[in-house]
Image (cartoon, rainbow, N blue to C red; front, side, top):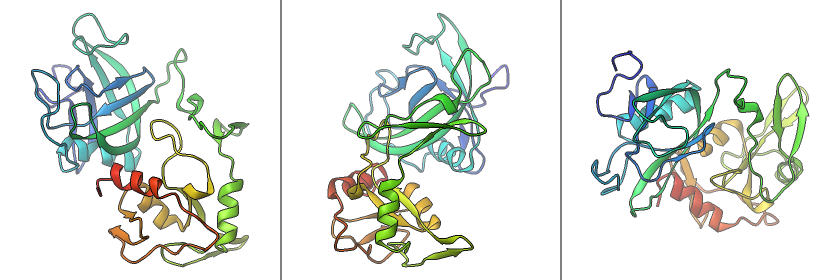
Length: 267
């Protein structure tokens, strides 16, 4: 606070739902935090006992700090990260606080924490310019069930195996399973393959047809952001009503549907 880098006294998140999150501090206050250096699995604010670090009640997306981090994720706003001496990590200082650099919030979900209460989790990746550290483009996602392929473009990035998504889109003739709309471009029909249970850690979803939907861009973003989810009977819940259309040759894994509902607060 004295340096003007973090403006919330005794709070881990400097942010709100209108402006996003400017900074976070890792100070050992939450037992579910995981600090991997260039990757951080950060526990949101609220519901913990400040003396023990254990959760004593559920966290909520309505918390201003949690809402701020979600806005930063949605708008691609960088977040300053600090580590304090009470944070148990090999990256923490022996005393005081240290600036860890700029990070990007790339994922947000809910899960049950170690103490049995719902917590808001955020995945942050380092995006600073220090050449001794990895850049976001060099941090590989872990596709545990399929091979990875690297290709060089302007930057080095992970290229997903798109054959499964392509086959699903072909099955639906590029028609969104939610709105039944097909986008016609100058180069042909367009739709997107959406994974129900996200790929990569910490979700570890499988790149399998039973985990892929054919969606238009709008409903893909809405689904990924948790604005709606799908019940086991294929009824849509949340900000979208109706029923998911499923081709008789397309078998969905209901465990993935249950996982999507759980991390987005529908259970």
